[in-house]
Length: 126
Image 1 (cartoon, helix red, strand yellow):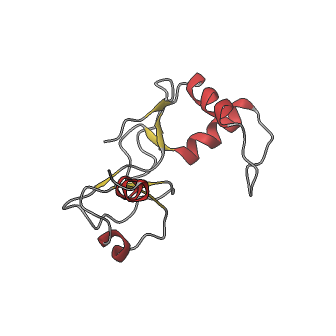
Image 2 (cartoon, rainbow, N blue to C red; image 1 turned 90 degrees about the vertical axis):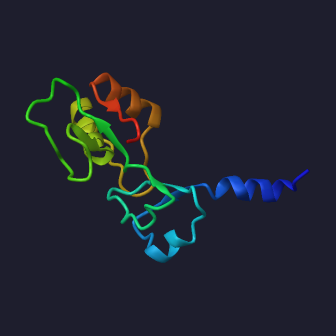
């Protein structure tokens, strides 16, 4: 039987949550098969196309009712917006007055439900 700590380390190394500061040297330390999952607004520079995969930045598909929205960011597919833009639109549509700067965060379930109600859709990883 494997020690629990070693088993956890082997699993943990396969998924990396990454921000904007990830450089090539850090990516090269990732084991084969690692999936990089960005939580930042901008996608990372893909240094490990040979044996690692990269998830897209947090994003949602726009509602069919939205017109003249073809592309917002050049790294996302057509009719897909970054989560940051979706949040701003939902914030305005709902008439919320809360400011999420700093440590203040709205109720995630409330925000998610409002986004879905307004027609934004989760985007499957490409």
